Image (tube, rainbow, N blue to C red; front, side, top):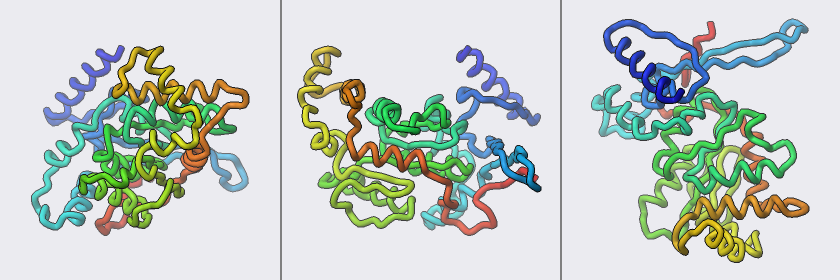
Length: 295
């Protein structure tokens, strides 16, 4: 039961705080916490051909706290010597929830801003050949806004989980902080920080020029009609329920014959399904981005 899992996690934490080491294996997102990323050892097994024979090869990945502190102090020199493990955990503690922690058990992750994408992308993916997420171990992780995307990307990427980032660039927004965050995400993925002129899609990142709703509207001719039906059926006001409306539209589009997937989303989903782990995204110099404990 979920309540029992949360209870046992607290018990394990108390035992560890008392000075004893606790080691356990789990497939439950309730028994891990992104704030304690350095205590997670991610096991990965793959079939490879070794000496002409098909062999299961296993590796283990762990991200040391010191590596993350080094990266943060390199990016923000004014923090040199001021970042402690406790403050680093505080930076990540707000990101904890079971749905986000699901990423630790995924073969690939699609990081998205909010519920609109989380609700809709799997529906569209089901309508595309070889793109259904669950059978491939792909998780859509909602980050609670653009502000946390880079933090979660660093954790998952450094544990060698291939990640695809999808967000709204918010072009034209008067808030400079929002635009700066968009540029920061593009730079994190190794892309140009120049403002895109239209939908931007690369191998590990994509962004709508303005927003999901407005940019996709041109690809869904009856978008307003479908949105009106959704509000009527779901009892939504004009200014509420955007994720529910997006999910409603997605379901209606794929129920058609043939299923209709907006071209932009088709391109993004195919890129996300094909994403591969590339390299460390941490700035500080070190021998390795993560500790390979497979030896």
